[in-house]
Image (cartoon, rainbow, N blue to C red; front, side, top):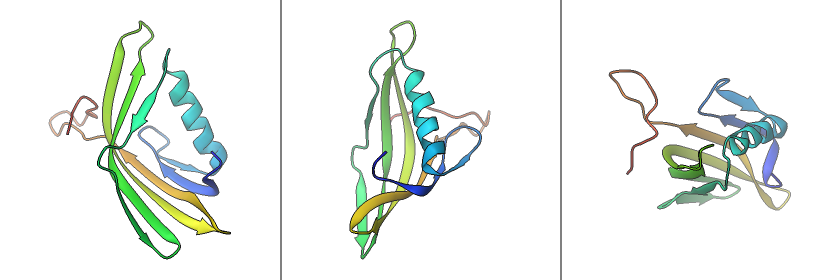
Amino acid sequence: MAHIADDVVSYEHDAPLEHVGVDRVREVCRSGLAASSGPVGWEVPGMRVLVDGDLAVAWGLNRMTAEAEDGTPVESWSRGTRVFQRRDGDWVAVHQHLSYPYDPETGEARTDLTP
């Protein structure tokens, strides 16, 4: 959380869709990690980063791995875009947008898709 701006705005997967401030984002992260009974992995293979002056944007497909309560491994994929700003010489995250693909027939999120 050290590199998350105090005034960060994060658009998350679940309601409420907008979380403003580092404390709200910390709580979203805490509850997400608590949902797993084991280790949680996160990677962004093929991440792209664009930097111009004091702004940077990173985007890619997020691969999350975790363990269900019964010990079954779980994998999900989502999309993510993050915006960073250099403040006082340090890079901090000022915005994040996460989303799942959805099934147009049901309108439900699809986490089981792979790229």
